[in-house]
Length: 150
Length: 97
Image (cartoon, rainbow over all chains, first blue to last red; front, side, top):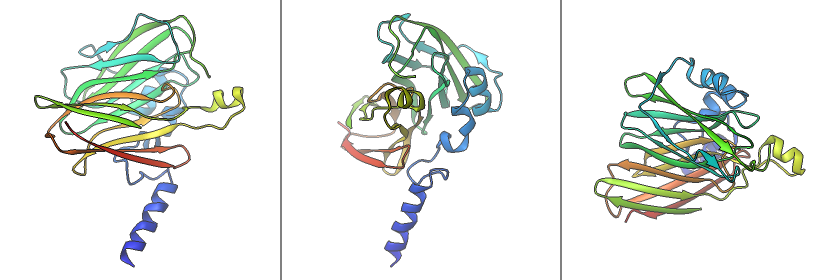
């Protein structure tokens, strides 16, 4: 019976995505829903971190200056800083927030992903350090063929 | 999903390819299809979260991730869990080489 009760609780938690679902320790879609609706990077950053006051630099964005395929623009994030939360924003799509990474204890800031960009725009990274400071970096990415959708 | 986890010295490098159309609101309306995108991805070793991502539909179709972390050893199991906007979950695992 205990097991059954546990399983049913799990199902309830998974169904109600407003709760931090059992599989996610930090679900920023649940904790900061407004950040995912914001049209501009500035608004999204404020909604997610509570402020857009950041320290520039110390984070390297590895992105092409000219992306040929806007449907999959490779973005790399590298830093020697000890960062816990790393968020990626862009101003090429209807809404700005793309992904928010949360690193565990042994996390190394060397990340890569691919994003959609339907036009040339700035890509902004804002990251929270273990020191509590907010760091940011920005790079313009030119897109020759826009990503599908949006 | 496809997972590769390789230990280089003391850092584990993970390459992850998920399977999702990543269709958001606007794309769903234009193409007259249903929204479908992954909203959260978690990577765990020994029950501990080593990396996670809250995701939206502006990641490319079939999202790709590469990430690195310390503290795991060869033979450890890396478990990936995903959940989409409908609450559907997927899980897969790989042994760190």
